[in-house]
Image (tube, rainbow, N blue to C red; front, side, top):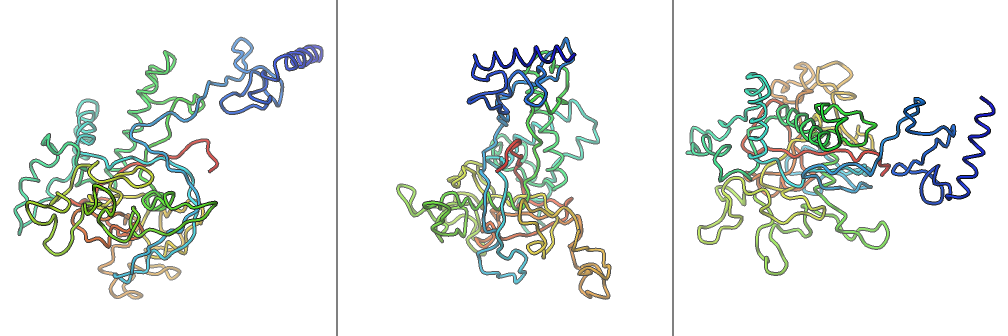
Length: 411
């Protein structure tokens, strides 16, 4: 055994001298994730030697592209609301955080995407699972408004295919993200070779051919991506200004070029004014609009303000801004801020401590949604504003988009 290792290292040394250390890695002889070399730098043993039971190292060219995903480079940002706190909630006070790089859907999930999901569930799943995935089309119904056409047509009529899906709860959106991950990975497996063809999407992580899970973005990720401060950079780590909305300027109309004066988002201007006057409509949408309708922000994301508000992962707490970690913050539950009414917490649902708690929605099932909608005034389009609903609730104004980690990245 000693002799064989002596021969091995002598051979390695000679080969390395001739090949510029390519056996151990890439440029300059240093191994990388994409080019780990043929031999372990720790043991000198050969990789991928199946006959000898060697450690298998799969080829890797980086995280595979995921459909509809846009890369969001992470960094430091001031998170919080820059608008006047008209609701006096003081639940998103400014603080500095850092967010790791991630991916986010270019657009909101549209009706056609949800119909595709229902189609697959109808073929491959149980009737119960299919029923659970159906959006609540009655969210359009009102006793004092004639919105009946949307109840019957909005989800399924072809003209609405690329309008954002609504009537979807946080729980339904999260289940969609799980299905979407399996569907995409199954296709990647089928294209990767015979050894993965029958894995049904369950592919070893070490293979490098899978994408990480689609999921709802955290509130910090969503707010960071919406604000897109990358467009305000000047010199080194300098920013010329903060933003009120996902675009530059304090106004909601485009101040530049041929599109000057056109609305930059789909929202409600004031009481009873959803689109402007016939013949020269402001945003051209009484309800939702085409998911690519308005200019994208500096990250290339469409409708990060207006059209529909969007679910995020976080459980709602008004004091999250002071409890959060300052690196990749998220609130998953009632940690440090319990809703049950124990003496150590704020007692949101404790009648004795909070006589108005009967009306409180603050529970571990209250989820944050962001971004403003077609039915909201401009105030709610500021990325720092936040609201919340029960995770099983649905409305005609809330949709979602997915996010995904950037695997193997340290920034």
